[in-house]
Amino acid sequence: MTKPLLSINNLSKSFGNQKVLDQLNMTISPGEIYGFLGVNGAGKSTAMKIILGILPKDSGEIVALGRPLPENRSQI
Image (cartoon, rainbow, N blue to C red; front, side, top):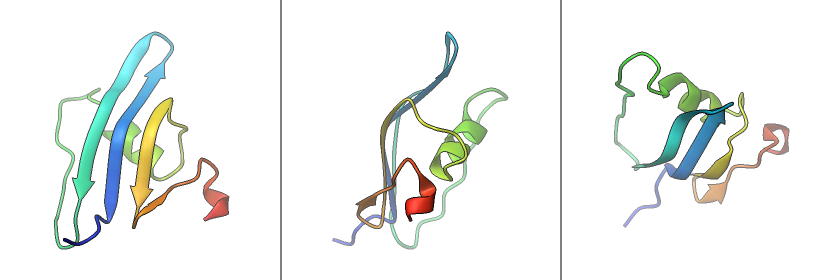
């Protein structure tokens, strides 16, 4: 079995009292194509910004190529 390219485990984010992401889980394996679909305000852009290191996460883990991504992306 191949190692996932990206694995997201229990990713959560809130803005004030508004929970935007609530324990998001997903795995992207080599050769797979994914898209984020959802209504306005569903958390698509927030999830991408957290994955890219633009926004901090409240909790959860993001693993790329078997390595946890650091909070400070300049460490990559």
